[in-house]
Length: 111
Length: 111
Image (cartoon, rainbow over all chains, first blue to last red; front, side, top):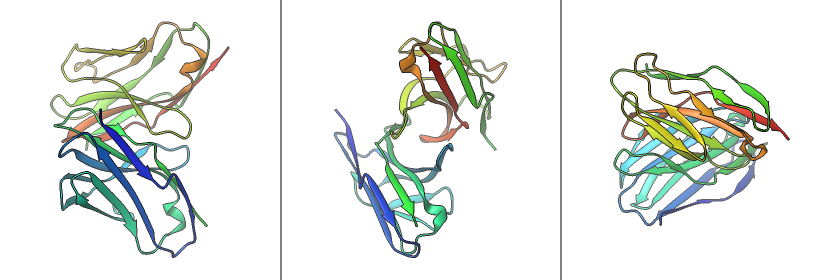
């Protein structure tokens, strides 16, 4: 069975500080990987997607970047956090254009 | 561009009531359509999907039928339970698993 693990579960960070969020997918080779962002009480906004190692496409510009260093790993980062980065970050995967499955998310609070 | 519209932002029902959440989409061709459910503090969970006109998806007593003519994929359940309280999202797949989500409908069930 496929599992998706996100880390950390929650973060409180200062404005201007760096950020790195990660996720790992086990049990599926070469999945499509995604990062989504959700403001409190808001809908889900896709940020990035990747169909293979080393290739990442940006969907929305939010002063964030993403990388896929390994087939099963997806990293979201920024060098300088803004207040507007607060929210719920979700990593997700799909395989061959089927349904998308989400991780448990990371709650980020920027203060 | 492609879009998904959920008419109801909030729905309040009593147990055993009939549920309808309206979802309309705008897209060319036959995009795959999805329903997801999200509980507080968790990532969205896949409920079901449909990919062809008149195809019915169903899970956990919920169902929806893909209607190309009215560009709709309305979620229905005959008898809701308190445990169904959550936020429900309609989504469409526009390219390689990249999803566009509706604004979400918060369902509250009174015991």
